[in-house]
Amino acid sequence: MASTEKAEQGKESTSSPKPVSGPSATCTTGATCFKVDVALRVLLFASTVVAIVVLVTSKQTVRIPMPFEAKFNDSPAFIYFLVALSVAGLYSLVTTLASISVILKPQYSSKFLLHFALWDVLILGLVASATGTAGGVAYVGLKGNYHVRWPKVCSTFDKFCQHVAGSLAVSLFASVLLVLLIWLSVFSIHKKIPK
Image 1 (spheres, rainbow, N blue to C red):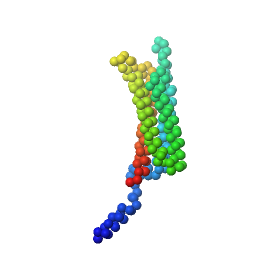
Image 2: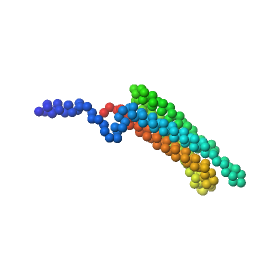
Image 3: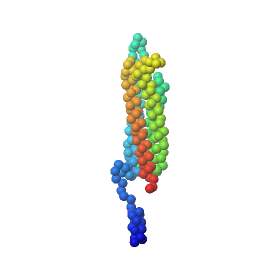
Image 4: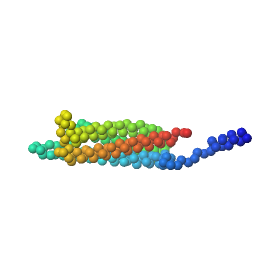
C-alpha cells in the first residue's frame, strides 16, 4: 500500500505543468513581451521628441520699458534637461531596433533582457534627475523666492513658462514609460528562471 502511494505521488510530480492564467499570462511568450517592449519604446521615443520640441520652442520676448527675452538656453538646468531628453530619445530609438531584432531572432532574448533592464534604469535616473532639476528652476520661476529676493517671472513670461511646464509634463510621462519598461524586462527575466 505504501508503494502505491509513492507511485501515485511520483506521477503527480512528473505531470506537465498547468497552464498559467490570470494577469501574468499576458506575456507568456517572449515574442509577446518584446512586442509590448517595442510599443513602449516607440512611445518613449515620441514623448522625448515632443518634450524636446516643446522646450526648444519656449521663447518669449516682452517689452517692459526695454525688451527682455526668455529662452530655454539661458538656464543651465534647461540645457541639462534638453541633453538628457536627447540621450533618452536616441537610446529609445536604438533599443527599439534591438527589440525588433530580438523578435526576428528570439535566441538572443535573454541577453537583451538583462541589458535592457540595466540600461533602462540608467536612462530613468538620467531623465528623472534632469526633470527634477528643470522642475526646480521652473518652480522658482513660477512662485519666486522672496527670502533671497527672486521675483516671479511666469507672470511676465507666461508663454515661456507654459512651454516649460508642458515639456516637464511630457518628460514625467517618459519617466513612467521607463519604469514600465524596467518592470517588463524584470518580469520577462523572472519568467525565464526555471522553477
